[in-house]
Each structure stands twice: as structure tokens, then as C-alpha cells.
Image 1: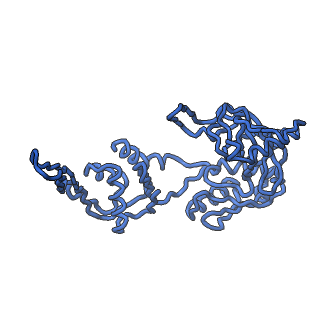
Image 2: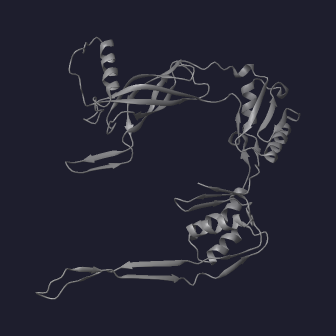
Image 3: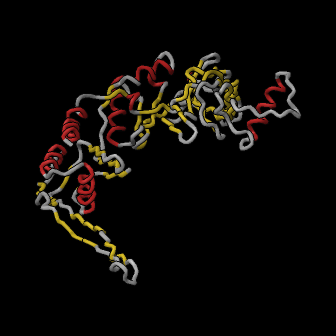
Length: 364
């Protein structure tokens, strides 16, 4: 709790410590990656492959591969346990050239127990247009472990998914001519009118002329021809390192599962009183068995006995938060109440419901 308060009180100084490069605030229109996907097989598994009776597509794919390699397996009882069907995914970065290498992720789609130690067989990777842009192959590095015996098993991590660093080679380039662009839009990752206006001003100051125009809270339009640069790439390289101070929204983000609370420095709370206490309800069952006397006729009877009670903690009293309280003062006040992070979440929810918390409240 003290660590949370310390980090939150440091946020104002961290947020105002300096400006941020433009490349970390915006995305350049058209300069983007492309998602790739492919279906393949992982071989060489230590008996942890697909059960071919439950995954017939694995057997069919393996037979097709062997036939292309000149091995005829038709009519054979071909049921290996060291093969698994997988989906291979990757992201083709912008301006990737033929012969370049990219990372791929391999995930089992059958009932394989683990991909540890397996090797991905040559797998073509397709984009949304159906064209093959890369081919993947290599040893799978799975991020989990499996240990099992006759009556129990232990799984740590996710052994049915892994990665192949530099496991795919680019075979086709995307058709995008950056040098032919005369205008480009800068898309803000966090749309805000103030930030967009500051970006427009900073770019125009850099080139000493009006080359950027703010269109809305999330878009700044750039006239590349007006920059008088050698090329579009030179202009973007000069622009992406311009420093801009972004405007932040007042926002409180709460993760109920872990009890994490993150608040921005712009969060303000109006004058409000907070009281925090707990009720403890106790219900205890202590049944008693009553037996008849020796040599007497009768039956054993179970007599129920219940002890119920309600205890109310003294609580932490009533605390008043004054008008326009800052973040550090809120944290100090809640710490003075001695509340836990989860209790703090409930308090912030109630303050927001009362209309005294002036910030966007996000619960995850």
C-alpha cells in the first residue's frame, strides 16, 4: 500500500519531466505492418503430438507432404505421435524487403500436449489478399513445461504455443511507394484537440512555414511538398524527432482482479466526506448427536445447533476531502484512513457515483 502511494505521488513529476518525440505520439498514414497467417506441421515431438483419431487433418496433411517428397503412404497405418498441426502467425513490418527475416508465433490447433523440441516444417504465410509474403521454418521455442506420471501431471506455462525468432523469410514485398506521396496524415494514438494543436505548431515551427494543418482531434495533415525536403523519407525522419508535450486526460484505471489503481495527475475530487468500515457475519454449525440410553429402544438423533453473529468494526472514522484535491493529497488521505487497495477501489467507485470524482473512470 505504501509503495502504491509513493508511486502515485511521483506521477506528477514524472509526467511533467519533459516532452515526447512525435514518433511516440502518432502513426504515419500508410506506414504500417501486415498480418500473416499459415497452416503447418510441427514434427519431432517426444510423443506429445496430436492424437490422429481426434485430429484427422493432421494425418491428411502429413500424408500430402510425404507424397510431395516422393513417399507413398496410401493404405498404410500411418499414425505417428510426434506430429502436431499448428497455425503460424507473424507481422510483416513496413518496407520489409525480400530476403529479410521476421519472427513467427506457432500455436497448436489439435490436441497436442506440448510443442517442446519440435521443428516447424516449411510453411507459407499468407496475407489478407491471399498472396504468400513469407515462408516459415525452424525449431520451436515453447514457453512452458509438462511433467506427468501415471496418476498426475503438472503443466507450467503454455507448452502448446511457442515462437521461432527470425523463423520466416520474406518472399514478397508490399506495393507501397512512399516517395510518390505529396500529402500524409498523422494519426494521434490518443486523440486530443490540444495535443493535435501543439503538434501542428511544432511542425510548422520546425520548417518555418505552414506545412501542417490540424483536421480534428486525431488527425494532423502534412503537406510534404511544402517541406522542401530531398524526399518524403527525409521529411518524415525530420518530423518524427520533433518534441511535443502531450495533453493528458484525467483518468482513473482500476484492475479489480489484482487490486491495481492508476490515476493521472489531472484527477480532481470535489469536497466530499468518506467513511469506511466493515461488517463481519459469522455462521457456525455445531450439530450434536443424541443417543438413547443403554438397552433402551430408540434411535440416534442429530440435533442442529447454529451460532450466528454480526460484528461491526470500529472503522476508520469519517474523513473529509477538501475542494479541488490533488492526486497526492487523495492518496495521503486514503492512506490516513488505513484502507487496502481493494477498499480504495470501492471508495473511488462511490466517490465517482456521488459525482465528486472529476475523471474518466475505467474498470477492467
